[in-house]
Length: 292
Image (cartoon, helix red, strand yellow):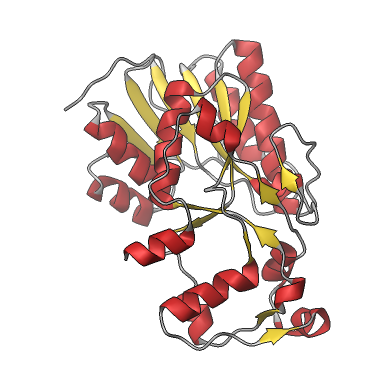
């Protein structure tokens, strides 16, 4: 057990799903006690199976029941509410933290806060312009946490994460069903990160992240959405899904998928690599597939 020096003794993860469990296991290997908090019984079972302490929390309720967060690292991995432009869950949490402050906070957000950039490269210094309601809620959560951190002198690091991939996250069922994709010339640019690399970024952000800073999280290898589906289809020896134009896409695709396809951007990940001293295990989806 390698218990290196850190500015905290315990780790608490609110919204402890798959990524939270991965992060928790890494901290446990470093000798830190970890508590994962979640709402559903299924999530609590997964937290326990990962060897972490588990506790139930419902961020839609007020007041909340929280463990002692003094001398703790707090991860906030929970999603915002499903409706509106506000993030009441983060607001509910922050209302409890003034008298129960952690030593630092690492928050997962989304690159959707940048909105559509028509394939341009985006850095952390670029202005936000969220177009989807879910992205506006995410940006609101970021703002609440960063404002609170500045006011209470608690370092807050925000991770804006692109698409996440891994063995159980691949859209193979969608490909098998032959659900259409956009024609390659129309498909938006996007970035991804392997789930194991994301977990390492979450550790590094807690150890080396700078207070009130934002980090774009991706492997830096951009591609378009159709290329992504084609690459997976070819690798797993499945028929490539049919490609359609926009009028047909709007007729046959879900609203959720259409909202993603209407945004195109590429992420600059140099700040993540430099500040957090990250060496990616999987520098691209192609490299990961080749290693399988």
